[in-house]
Length: 520
Image (cartoon, rainbow, N blue to C red; front, side, top):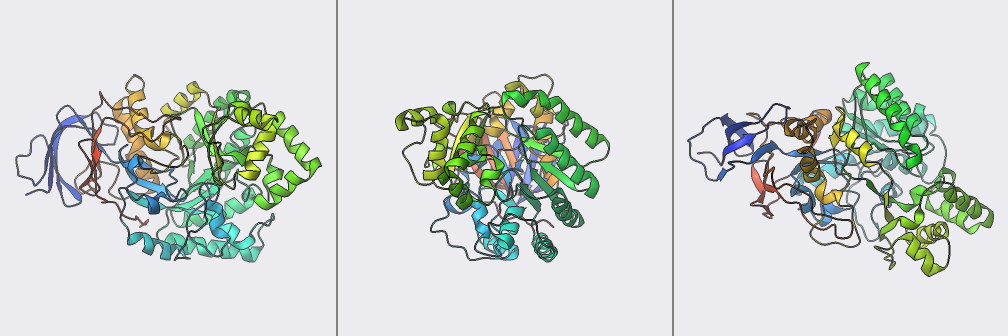
């Protein structure tokens, strides 16, 4: 007797092949039979007639660790209800391990208030042991964040690594990958990684390549210098033959949108020359990011303490305000999503805040950064819808949330991509003849799974783990909005993780069948 039998499903297996009406049988945590008709008995039978059965979706760009949701909310509701069965955390240069000094964890503070947090691990191996004791709705794997490694060595100093320091970081990176880390991430636009040289990245990429891991880059620039930033990432991948993923690829601000053709040309050329490069993105035009990231690079080098000194110096402060004035950004329209110090500004635009403070929008930006704590997150519409669609359709793209797994309620506003990325994409894709459901599902499943090196996941195949999604293609849609993001998507009827139902009949079951994954 099978533990689960799914009948009459339109099986889209994740490889890009057209769907086929089949039965799929599961025993324990594995797919054990696929056939046009299976008549054997099963403890649980699901009739999926007129429904799509797809592999569980894989989110390569997830922040459920940096928003602390893997601990506070292991049910990861907003992800599992989208069909994500595996997530990769430790992105954008920040991870929860290894923590070689008390400074290392500070790389997380741009996303989550760290006050009162207790940790009982230091090495990546110890972190994995801790995760292995827990269960989640999704499977969870992790990268190592380079800012986390580097800050443990240099703290808030702005300087290059000495040879002994670089050797120490390489050794810890090797040990972390041996303990199960899937690779290394970089957040090159953030304050503690801005000054990292291409040579330093090259040396770290060689370590990751030797361990057959994923090398992930949050570009040094996504606006004025975005072409140069993409070229830098590709040159590192070309020179080291590393497995490169560019995080949340985009071109910010209207005056830079004309650069996208040059970027896609660089990517296409590199790929056809043998560079192993892909990128991820989300199907939204509005960004969710730390407010301090708008400041000039020189003002944030060295971290928050140095930045606040610049604010208190009238000359430096005026230089910052002049820079903000010349960016061509409508700061008045940017909306505050959250602040660490719980200021009463959530949901208000910076223009509204400036009016209350009787100052300019640029001055209000500095006021918020200064008084809102390390975590001030904002929404800004600065992407072109046509370009987002072009990148979604690009053969090198994967679809990822760049979000976290939240529950039905929460403090502050979060980006709706945390609740609606996959359903929004699948709904959108059905109106485009240029990309059918099989190709779209591949971007969500086997594509990212193979990129990451996941074994037996991302494809509906006998012997693979039973990470499965059943959805109604006529009803699938996102519901989350910027004003009310805590709304689960519709159309996802069942989600099975390791053979157990995390979602049944459109609702979470309370089961936590996911576990920590190690690269093996």
